[in-house]
Image (cartoon, one colour):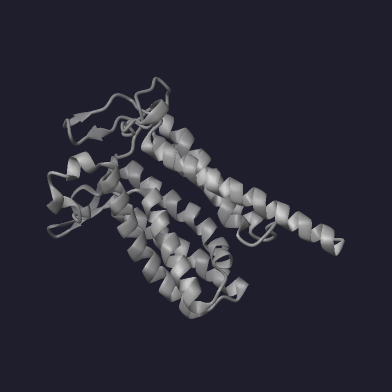
Length: 260
């Protein structure tokens, strides 16, 4: 793997950080174009970028620490040290970003769901680059496999190379890329306001739940041998699917009333 792309003097430039930055920039471009198409306030875009990144990183770190509390409870000083172990939770980042978006939409008196629809495809696209960064960094890899595409990763804890393992980072990256194209196409004529975001939440939950079965690092088992990420995915899926069913029923009722 290539965790360090190059060095600027004594400063290492890490592949994961570079790919996350690329993902954020590409996602911002998409959201900017969607804001223009939907005629959303330009100032809301700038505020959303700053607030979503700030609360997204905060939420990602806090959830990662909460899920790994046994590691951090005896070393509280390391909690804010993201640069040391890079521990972040994608689900936590989403919750932080949603909170930022909800607050700003209330402030600007703009529909939260309209903004969420503009952002949803960018979440899949930006996350795609993030998972490529995981692959280059050699983290989040899978369990050993005899498949011809198995990859050996360096385990920094044990200081050894793993057996050929599932490149789960690439599995998820491929799924995210497909999801982006599906959402981008669907966003042109969604069934209701918020549908693009709801379908992102629904299908990403299924993708993450499935990939977790091959993840080697997903060792925190809970009820029925499901990982913490799988339980979070189930919760996200249930909320998104229930909301979708309710909105479809509402749209159907309105259509019947108006004779559409």
